[in-house]
Length: 313
Ligand code: XIL
Image (cartoon, rainbow, N blue to C red; front, side, top):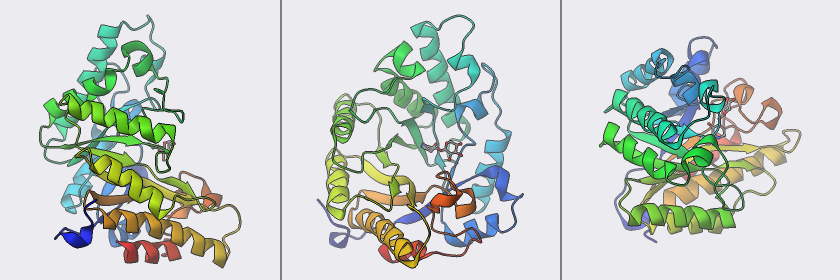
């Protein structure tokens, strides 16, 4: 492992998932985002059900607005996600006539190409495939997996690269922060893609964690090192840390400690250059209001977790 202290490396960027629909609608949301974070991921605005609601016709407007906002603010955007098993339009999951493999491949490649091509030079990295493996390490069933087979992952990377040869292309996965058969399979998948010249540049660790049982520093060192050894970058892409119950001082301190462990692990490895949290404030968190999983509270005030992340990065 090369430690960050051994080289001159830029600091780690702290970013957040943003909902375009809240940016102008919710008082305080935009300013809280701008004063706290240095980059963004559209939380839902680039999922396929949003971008391609009917076959072959794209609805770019909302995504364009969010990307324009980020570009104007000079904040980097992680595009998310090109190929995902969830949040698909009905024309894909419930076709009138069952897909042939060739047809669905054309749909996948067309979507990945059109989207990366549209944002060429304006979105610096993409989650090309999101959640490929299940917790046992087998391929997760999805329309892509079921109809196209294992090769859909390679198809997605090659089409995204054709659309924007300059973008950093990422495989984003959930639940691989801990040692497990799923993590082993993810390492094998990336090694296989790299060995065959598939244009993959990075791995995203989602980091949806719980106060009870977060990964240790050793766990995170190990997983970052495994991927870095394959020559790809690593980043934390969707971090949140849910609380088990009431937000007592003790629980908030343990939440801060979990955030610090992630930030610190990222900082220590040169391969890790960005940590994105999955939302701005606890009122709109994906884990639910009561989970209070984010670094700002419902009034967009910084929690102990924010202080911890800032110190860690
Ligand atoms: C979630 C959003 O946060 C929710 O608003 C939406 O209802 C469902 O999707 N892994 C991912 C994200 O990669 O895209 C998911 O986002 C959360 C899990």
